[in-house]
Length: 156
View 1 (cartoon, one colour):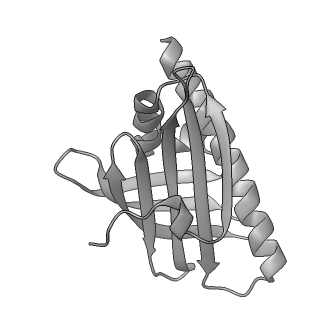
View 2 (cartoon, rainbow, N blue to C red):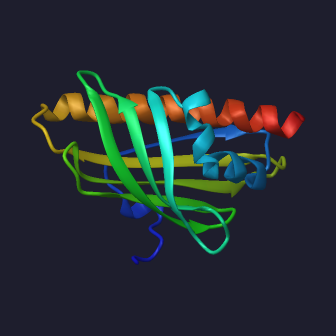
View 3 (cartoon, rainbow, N blue to C red):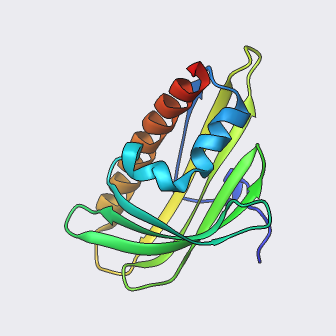
């Protein structure tokens, strides 16, 4: 298995946001892949295929609503809990290559700076500007959803 990648190693779209929730809470929301269809825009279903020794997802299958069609792919995960969650796609019919990460950095106020990096290479023809626009929309929507879910969980 490859070493955990930092966000600086991933080309593509990188965005960040801050939340009042702690890195541990944000990490726990991010690693709960089964809940993604409830809050992650466009995610139709997630199936955990393998878990690691800590019980976290090691491999998962996703179905997402794309601009033109449903896209199916599998991701392999690595962790540096509670600071980093990274993934890489297993090449398939819809995705040739994808890698990304969430990085969770403590803030001085006790919250978390969340940095999301994503690079996607689909296995179908799409102009580069549309691919980049899609990446940006995915990242922005995911950050909003993750922040909202983490803040709700922190208030429970």
